[in-house]
Length: 425
Image (cartoon, rainbow, N blue to C red; front, side):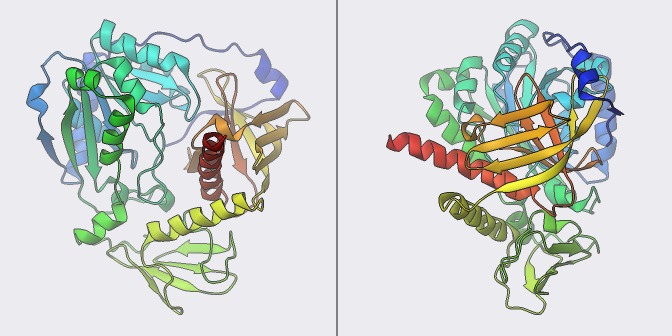
């Protein structure tokens, strides 16, 4: 999937008129039907199966909050098949509106920014549920899983559920990540997909529970491991490209500790520094080719990388400095390429400078619990996104190796360390 891009100067960008925030509009029923027809066609190729639990508790015209795990682009088709014909809004990133705002609003999408405090979002969701009488679909992870396990959820999620006072529904998908993992360069594997939709909490139950307890309940539904699922269910993935791009996730060699020297190609991932090589087999296990395997499970390797980053932060050894191309969104017409700059990340947070001195943006570690980090974003390249409601910066590192995953890990661990320090004081 691509996005409309235009190259302009930063001065030209500042002259563009920012879009006015609009209240959600009820989804067009004809478009909803068309989307469902298209979705069914896509899902038929995956032998899609669906399961429902407790959904008889939800009245036909009763709006609800639907939370769904986010694994790949096909999640939107799954959502349509599970929810239709019930009208629903979709919480969508602002970049999704570029070049197609009218269509997105007719579908019922509500724009927001990833990992940015958007005080207007709750207002929009409340309006949809109470005034439009439509349900709201949200992907609380906000981004695709990098290693096939659940990503961090916002601490405020329980408060959001209590604020909306609507039934809580959760959709879990199975096989979507295995079919199209983010790291694998949009190459589709032959994997069957299924989903389960469950009525989790009634408004009365929500009212009687604390926000913290609701958050714990949601966390239980978002604790998964897609590689483990593949292994336990003996799902065979024999495509010869299954390890392509795996270096985006497994960026650090566990044998020589070199970073950014891993290469994932075909069915192998190897270190170009020490030549240690692994095979990703047909059932999702890692096997050492010329070394004793330090890890046989991709998420365990990724977890080790997280632990390494945390130690670097605690020992004041972590730092990032990368030359980047800078893109921004000023309206819904284009993604604007505004120039180049330097992105730095340390215990002090992010600092982005560039565009001939026009940009000097700083972001504290406490600003967000995670990071907008993506691979091959809109087929442009690997991306690190920072910013706030005033300005969002989409940074594409140049000639730096695989740093996106580590930067996200560092952001998450730095946020945790800051929270731990606040608790001590």
